[in-house]
Image 1: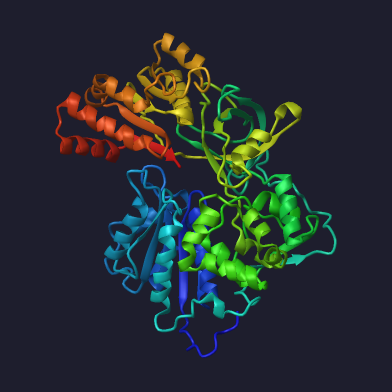
Image 2: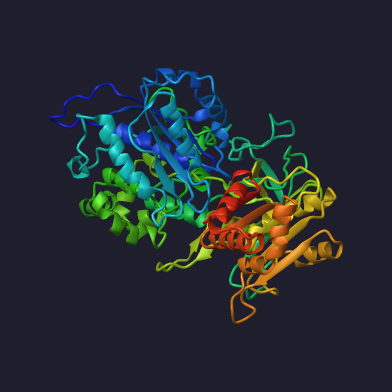
Length: 606
């Protein structure tokens, strides 16, 4: 990037960005920080927390921590070793006295321990002598604008702190058109298709190094793909089964499976046409700066077809930083002016109206700005468009009941906004389109621990509240517990109508007959007054209170995060007051204690 005339040269600032990410969002934000650092001519390294030698922190002058919170307030898998180290009691209180730091958290305010990891890390770094540049940033998935609503102003303040008296002008209009900051990678196009080039995914073989993972997923044969909602029901929900024979995959109730989806062929073709790319062209990816790793999942060499199909998330909703970079890349005056408006702090309402509320995708935005799209240098594809992230699904079966099989319950996401074309979830629609009856189908997947853990002690009852597809992890738990001889299983299940979306009805009733399950149902649309699971909880208050207070039951909740978790928590608090005779504050403290001791666990999603 060209220097800005008249600007005082900056001191040699070294910035380290360390991230803990479970689904990839924290990593995406870290890469955004890296891009913004390059724009400001600040040297920046980005690493996962567990891949960084933590003892070197004592030598780092400036560190930004970007971390998600998972499950019941736990750190992501790729920062657990760091987490254990940083909370050692024998670390001196002056360990990090030379370090300036800032913590950016990513969480979901529908959870009780919202951004717990970021808050706790911020306090610990202060205890070890670090100097906080800013208060901790609490990104929230539940906000209308997503985490960016908090992240954008926080980053603005961060750069003011980092650059001090040497700021770059932030008016993008001062940057000459067509002279953007350097891309992170270059695409070196090959004249011939390499004879050794394989367009197949790298998969776990017969003798894999450890269980399947994101770097080496297992290509699981799809056995069945069955719609389990009635033909007149508004939503298509699928029960999908995979054969995991010989995969090395193992799981218990509460675990999740991660699936790597692909873009549709029509979207890939549309994208390549908009950007003037030859899908059959092959390339190798090379970092511009030494020491910068290439995306680990991307094969070398690779075709444009495969890059767009399997790696670039062209159906995601773009963030403000996307418009910022697109404005830099644009040489078309009118399009550039509009892009600058969307990327400015003053244009956020316009951006929200154009892109975020109607859920307009990256591909659709590029088609709306054809002159800019057609001139995007291929080198910037990985800076501009995030990688497709794996989608997590609760495993809905137990190996004790279905050996060598893995089942998931998938709601196919499709909804209408003011845009003509329906919005479709990438992974759920891709899965729904696969038909093993028409020929072999393989899906790349791997398993990791989930947010729900079930009691190991015998005879501990469990109360499970799972409306809709939220019942999926509880089917795995019930199958597992029944196979182990545990009969204290209480399930509150809610749906609209028993003949349309009552998942596994026959299975539940058979377990009820055997005395292995107490089933309580709420069919919200079968009477004039809507009845939900929280109403059934209140009706059975004596049962719930007796199980929790007298028998030490564990309580679980899974499903949509919008209203249901708060309604269920309110129902529990009322039960504690009415059946346990507790005062309002004491009932709230009782609920908090259940959460703290993991006897009340939730798994919700937006």
